[in-house]
Amino acid sequence: MKRIMGSFLNILCEACGAERARMRVAVADGGRAVLVLDQRMPAASYAGRSGFGADYGVGRGAGAQLPLLDFASAVSDPREWKIRRSANGFDIEIDLVFGGNGDGFVSDRVSKAEAFLDLFETLLDGAELPKRRADDECTTTPRFDPPFIGDSIPMIELKRMIGAVAASDVSLLIEGESGTGKEVVARNVHSLSRRRAKPLVIASSLEMPHSLLQSELFGHAEGAFTGASRERAGLIESAVGGTFFLDEIGEMPLALQAALLRVLQEKEVRRLGESRRRPVDVRFVFATNRDLLDLARKGRFRKDLYYRIAGVRLSVPPLRARKEDVLPLASFFLARCAKRAGSRVPSIAPAVVRTLVRYRWPGNVRELGNEVERLVAFHGDEGTILPRMLSPHLEESDGGDAGAPGARSGRMPDAVRSLEKAMIADALRRFAGNRTRASEELGITRQGLLKKLKRYGKPAQNKSQPDQI
Image 1: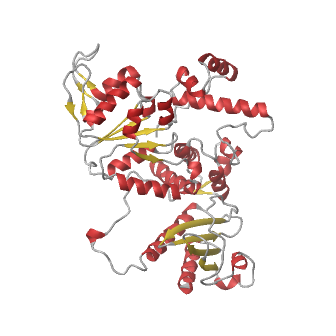
Image 2: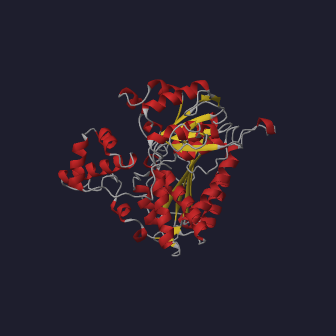
Image 3: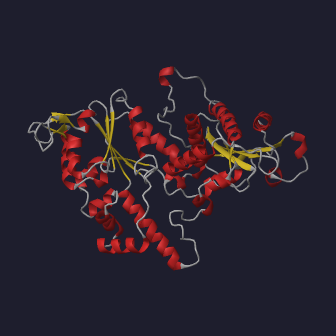
């Protein structure tokens, strides 16, 4: 086994231009490592030198006692990159070290390394299968469309849950911060369901004024109100046979919540201005970035509706909780933006990788995608993304609270002022500038909010970043 893995590491180093590769394979529940190898290119040149092998023992076999595998995502050395996998009851960790000052470390080489490790993982996973199962017995990993990037532990669990619930017609509640990708989850639930050949209709409670929301969702009869010159089916009816996804359900008025509850219970919809009800065969998926149960306790969300839609809840983790996914996501966005621009995919300098991983990404995946899009637009023809090309606030952040720029200054008043400004800007953004609702969310009076806006200045509106992903 050591000979096979040693050969694998040599091939890996040669293909990726790495100076050294180390492999650790440990029992998945932690505690006992079964194999440790340290290879250099050429292999003979590492003999007698200190390094990974000096710490753990080169080529020690089963029984070697090692620390538990470290799943920290920060990169401590610009020349080093870690790749981790789990297969057949084992945790596999690969360390790649590039020569010089990290100049040889570029994203396409890491992608090659991950491809080799994918192959190795596949071989290891199938090594102890007694026989090949019949095709009708085989289970495969769902094909996510649109792509659902991320192999961190929270994302693996989320993908598993999506695959498990997609085939049923149970209503879903997708929870997560703004920008985490709740709509991507909803699209994958639909694409993996038996309803995928039928429409997926997407709406948001913040997309339209509340006075029009009822007509948009449920439809209306001719003459139901001024301007209703003809009858019109609502968005829910438009999704018959397929899936209806409603984002930001926590912003729906209480009166419409009661009407929606009846649709969920009776599978019928009544258009505005009509007395008869129309049957609807629709799978409902909802999303929110708020705590609906807390809103229900405050009387701002119906408890019966909450318990009706919260039977199955999918939680989308924020990007700061899965930092090992930052580089794969950045690489995906780079490739997509470069293809659209008709340019070559630029590589990522090691210092940029460190900055991207350390930053907290308060805007989550959407913010990362927007940053990459900006990089390609302004610097896509330069070949390599360098630190000077990043937005200034990314370089200024060292892993603290990126949502409050002054929170790490030495003066407490400055920190409090920065935090207040950030919270006000976020509340106004989420409520589309509605100051009354923003003040309620912040726990202050509307007059108090107006005073703070006068003191700090009205937050700038960034129209390039919509509230929903």
